[in-house]
Length: 269
Length: 269
Image (tube, rainbow over all chains, first blue to last red; front, side, top):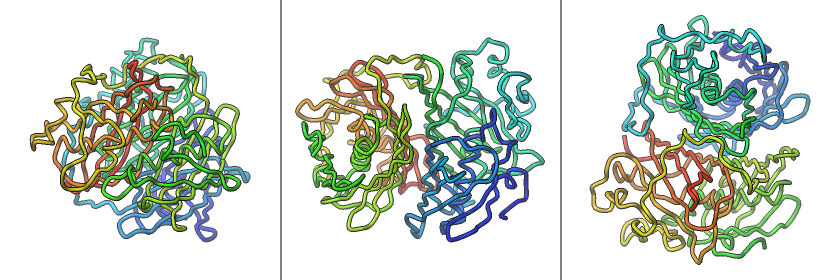
């Protein structure tokens, strides 16, 4: 078992059981409805890539979700496509009951703790609403159970809470903060989960039930400082019953540490 | 040979030579320096996915670039990961001289010509500078040759031309129009190229030479109308000698038809 120092590290741990082959266990607690969260699955695939390749940190990962797995044992298969000096490229596959559930291409490198942003004017503005002014999103009292909400501390800004009372703002944006429990710090693996932890930005437009992820691409840009991360989840376009969403994650020092884009199905339009 | 009705269709044509295996030819004309453009390679991988899978149109494609290929013959290998009712998921690989050059995961579906956007307020504003007010970007007279520029008509808005005279605007944005030659209309395959056709948005910040793509993810959202497409290429963050760029493509009717994100190396910072 690797790195089982915190709750998230524990539910994403892998045991090597052959050349590039790993065994893991999907937790029933990291689910929406009865399905494991897509970012959680990508974190497991990302961990496998760091174990199989020659570099420590995921810098880019793109997953296509094939069939939702159930909580329980999974196999993770990896193939190093290229082991370069500065980066490795690794194909990873999540398999359950001999059926492929998700496949991801992952690029790993060694992130330098001493690097600094050179230009960041193309990013959305980071919000200045402090952690304590945001409300913890509870596990919903009715409808689809979201066990995941009890495993993290997800706080939304007051302006992002409209969907709870039937009065969304219509901007397609949710902003707030995310922490792992018991002070577990974020790292490049848990950032792969963080970009998919928030409710869909479409909740700020219209509630439309489950929004299943078809494709999720994440870039990890820097090693995060300890502490909660600031999250912006933003829908861009709903067309042909699909929505794309962008997510931006800043660490507690205000540095952009991860970003993602995803395409998901939606029952609107 | 498939679909060789126009110049772009011709340079992306594939011949089936076995179960899920195709032969293609990388044109020396679709290059920057002596390397084929990354979007051009993704278009070939996307075409292979539509030929291998049960659906006609690429809706999501994510490529990791492993080793740049040279112009000349290539093999394209495909594996259908899942053939569903409404979508197929296909792994595609571009191989030259028995070495993997790029691998992509592709989701295909059938785009409905009758669909309409349901909500688009999360998109950047489309510019209103008309085609004729934009300047065709020539193949550069010195420095790295960009043969690709003679194969397309790429026009930039006056506000995006600062880099040509050493006075970039510093916004990290280039806007303009793109056409294929001889009136060849765009389709979901050539849109995979279109998102990578513009110079990097970083030209509007600082010229820094070649910006090699590490990862490129594209979503095709609708079938484009005939005519030139409107392009916004935008850098978001330069950190640790990598830059991410988003690209948005609107058709001649002003509908968002494709969008992408890419992570690239850059010699800045």
